[in-house]
Image (cartoon, rainbow, N blue to C red; front, top):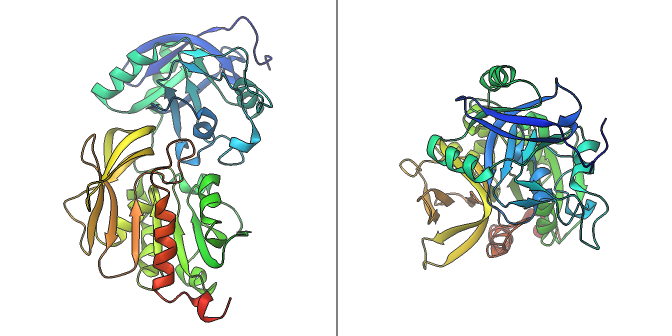
Length: 375
């Protein structure tokens, strides 16, 4: 394998499934030879920092991330910023990959981290041009590498993307585990859990993290004060088995969902989801509360959304000021609510962290079992 941070990089290309070609240079594992090819659904992220959190966010499974901010890797990486145990995206595309780091926290470079996990990407790409194309044409599959254009185009068109795919099974925990925390007890379904979410939940409750396939009866048998539904990758329309699980939980225990958890909750009460043209990926998305009109700047990462037309038994609590997408709902007949964005915001603003306290109050109002046991 080529060493990370070398001065010369092989010429490479990003080829979209519609035939658009962008030139660049390969780095990391993608620079290992002429046969090196990475495929996935390409999306753009507008965050100005937090590239390590993005790369290690399980919600990016099946995707290649193009960063709109032109200078990526300048402060290196540190294990403290990992959102999971390994990267889950298929690779990254940047305008300029920093060749040296400048941070006292850094334990290595971004390229070294990608090489360690067998990932790579392209640098020197006109990411503004790419972003404009995706905004006009919508998210699409792609292939990138040092192979010829014909090979890359064929690979891009053969890539299935995320539509209709259950990617949760690739990222969920294999076994339950416990995270110590506050006085309440929460069962957290891991559909692709971010570490920062666990950090926030631990301030209010001890957490039992369970695999996505855990039946509702088993989760309820742990006698939680509430159930949390995590973020995760893929198409929620392909997750009927998880929707059924959420339906079995509703009315039995307070429920709070984020991102994919929000989509599953909305589907469980009779709503439907749809694929956005190019998704919301960034740390600067304005969201307005329908009650009171307060605006939050939020971190977002999703390619699907709930339709506002059919949400029986729920009210919309938050909407996107960019495009009107439903960003939050609250059930009217059971103690449950969810948001599409990321109130834990790793990386990103902290405007919405009050939602974890709302979850705490919801559990306390509805007679937490742990409280009745004197726990």
